[in-house]
Length: 205
Length: 205
DNA sequence: CAATCACTTGACACCATGTCAAGTGCCGGG
DNA sequence: CCCGGCACTTGACATGGTGTCAAGTGATTG
Image (cartoon, rainbow over all chains, first blue to last red; front, side):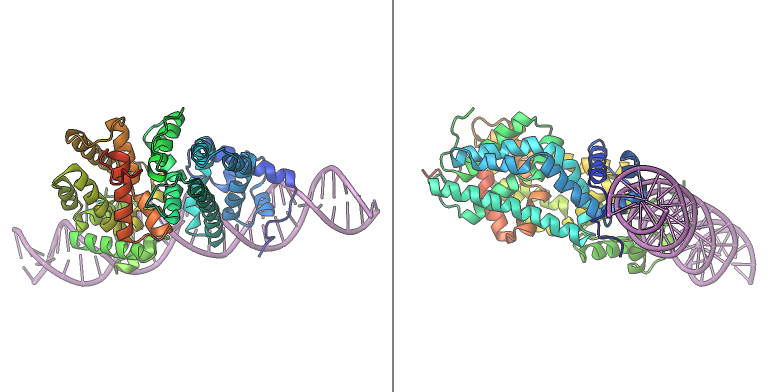
């Protein structure tokens, strides 16, 4: 029951999302209770339920909010606008490097929810499908330009690209292994070229 | 307070761990409550606290239990015994392919706990350090045998090997993208050779 | 002026974790 | 034989987070 989550003042809604984002970001993925979110947004705990059906819905909205705020669409456009497929690869890695630090805490939180919540799981799958589609387009472009490595089917190449540029890989290398953003961009870009293209290492940068 | 977790009959302890493992495995990483574990082990909920200090301690013991049961040490030995560094890479990938399906549900569960629990976090770091050490040894072997790719420092190579053979990468490719065990072994093995060694398989151009 | 909207206050039920106290049944040593 | 201790059970309870409900308040608007 209860309002599905449509009601409430949009400004308050944004205030809640901003507060939640800042709160979560400030804690590197640790737990955040709804009471804390409410307090941070200077709103009663019950007000959250005027805007979001439940906890999962709030964090779901949060991811979209962050995406929009960070200009995800524009960044993707920039990748698509790269002069060549190979340049697009480099640009895609750079995009991950820029966006992931902000998205990561939210995603972390999301992970713990998606097993319990149907809507969260679906939204997660959507996001994954979206990135995978982008990867397929990138691979198709390489194929069109004749730079896709021989013996690599587009489907496998897309899967590899998808995995190698995933948030998790970024997390492993940057957060766990301490690579700097620059190192991540350079080294992972090199790996991508080696794995996906037959041009090998074009002495870039 | 309370018993630190040493007390109780070892047989019962094993029964609890087995029940918990089966329960978790049967649900692809979804939630499991302690009451359910107790019921599955045909033991009172309170009995769990005779054997484990708390929830985190139980799941921690569970990972070790599964490792021992699956013969992790033996599998690692087999990798070390491979005739060449390149063969060791292939063997390591095969090991992941065999072990990960069993370990994954537990690891998944662990992930959700380690942010809240100091002991769990430490144990997790231990595990990671262990795997990283193994990767460093593998890379050192490649270097000794002169097959480590030129322009790749051992440290970076170890990080890449560590990430590419991680449970998460396996999860992405096998569970999410639907690669079969055979495909995972072949394709990821190929990628490893391409990225880490200069022998490469397809120097095609 | 009345109605409505957005939000607050202060309950409440539910459920999982973790604790406590008082048992029960069994087994070995005196 | 019986006593003490061990492993475990039963049933209660505190705590803390989520989600719900009902009765407000205060500002805006028709």
